[in-house]
Image (cartoon, rainbow, N blue to C red; front, top):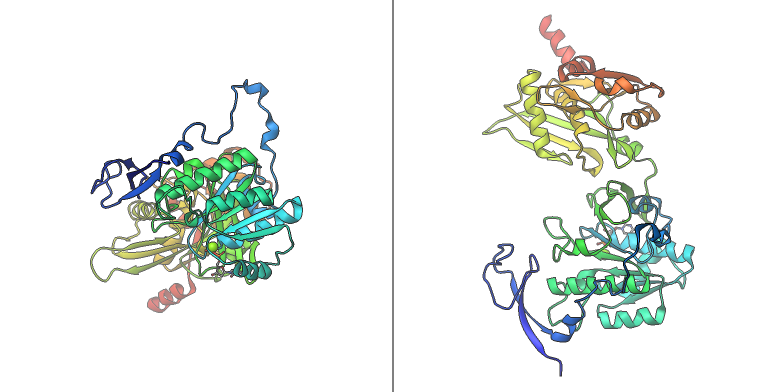
Length: 470
Ligand code: TYD
Ligand code: MG
């Protein structure tokens, strides 16, 4: 007879204890310990080598590199994020808010992989019925007998289906709905998610089955389940973006087979996700000419420069402390830049509420965006326009100096490619720069210098001044 035991598992961090605690001794969360009954048998399987494969010590030179061949998904932005395609036998976890497009992306991936590899794709969904999946697939133009859908949540049955179908690719939508029957706890609980992921990892490695897994995201943006979920899998991608915007950004937060700073940009259309070939153009297309409080930055996302509009709106504080509200820009960075503007450029910002935004739903977090933030703030505050043909790159130091940034050549080239006339860059960056691009490059050393050269008073401000003068 199989022996059953009971234990308490923290639903927040996965801490396991034979006793109940009101407060988890590991992470300090209250009321998170949940009793679980498990069979001693099921637990044994977890021990030993995590991927179930017996391996031998081998000299570094003798390691076979063929193991890292990639299969292109033929969805260019996804391939870019994965580092050129998906590695056979790897497990890719895709997280993101509900409704962001995870199922849509994986259905499109299934269609592409089935078409180009000729192997079966097993699409297991614990969330939708087969007919719902088919309806979506038809909308996306995915069809054929190579995509096998299987609405199931029981891991025993899924293992059996894998044996029968012998797929080349496995899609699990989503890990929180899957259920390992050997464990007594409910689907979605910490131990279930951990066990199911462990099992999927084992299947992926043993059978060389390339697996994509959808993971739900909690309120604070982490993948729901134990923290170690992200450590277990090979690659973690996050789907970001605002559900109400068309743009979706796919970001790698972990990649055992490639870099993690590439992003993929998609737009959600009537017939599914489309890759955005020229993101800079798309991010700028709604820009108003001659508006104040707007400046363009050339930001590097991985190896790719993209141009994004930064907007600022300053308005006098009516009550209490001045507010600083940001979207897509780090709040502390914005506060710091405003303090520098106040101290070094004599802009009286302390009694101004500031609203800052990176348009298009992107999140920017590199120091090189500082200068554009400062220009947008100053432009709004002084009601002075930034020339629509100008763009800005540079980090701002606490003494108001403009500091050197990386990859200046590709930034300048991208700006030139999109028809910008002038780019303001840190002067220090220009010592080794050979001008090749068709754009005027202006080197600046301080923030005041940049403000003087790039801001021109708006027509409204001029008219007001003229009126006052008369
Ligand atoms: P979905 O892939 O179901 O999201 P997730 O699996 O991440 O929860 O995407 C759902 C949203 O995408 C839904 O709001 C409708 C929209 N959508 C389109 O706009 N076009 C399409 O072709 C499809 C399939 C979905
Ligand atoms: Mg879904």
